[in-house]
Image (cartoon, rainbow, N blue to C red; front, side, top):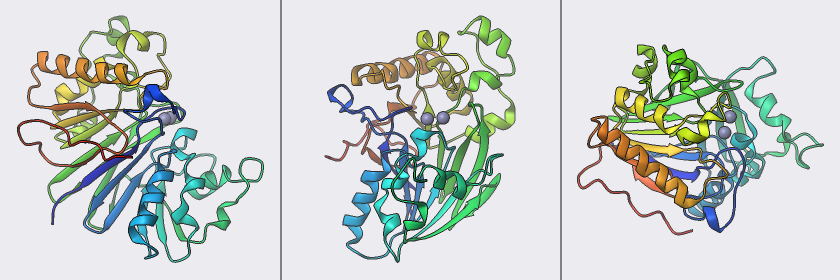
Length: 310
Ligand SMILES: [Zn+2]
Ligand SMILES: [Zn+2]
């Protein structure tokens, strides 16, 4: 069977950002769909999951929908679409939901928290689909897909996911500030251009991805004023890719203040700096809402498929 395919439904960080200045890369917050045969996996339920749910309802035309939802963390921009995920309200559908056990509760409790009466008119219990909730582990399987998790540095923590099946390797590392765990973080803090060194185990988690989707919310200049906010800059992404050598890298969690031109410029800048760091042949792009592609070693010429029309 073929490997994974991916489709982006929300690529924005922090808050939905509709408007003409974001219409190319999209204004919806984090939601990424993966498929392997009949197996469907969703990473996070930011506002993008509303349109994913609508697309599934249309595609299945009343037949049962079965999928797995993996949560990286529960910051608002990663869960706010869940109450608007229409397939969860339909009897006959079934979803397994994975998230990290936290000091203030498990995934069921925390996801349901945003649907309490003061926040939302409909409670979690109104969802008629079969929902089963699971704590994540360092490694587990979702049908035939091997899933590994890594704790990423971010306020309150965030899980990175590595999914592998049939030779297809997908790594998802949204919300992360990897400078915070660089072995030489003092040197990096003193000089943002200093090459970062990371624990071998962390690099291993990222190594050899066919597609790495990674938080690159800030330019290096912006990052200087946002240290500790939990997000990467271009220099960090370049250093990580220099060590982990992904075939393709998608910049993700675009800043609400970044318009389409800026997001494109950041991807170009990342590609240029990777090339001059000796990482040649990697496909570098900014994740774009509705873009769908196979997770495989890119063939030449390196090119992205056109995003599906909205
Ligand atoms: Zn976020
Ligand atoms: Zn976050």
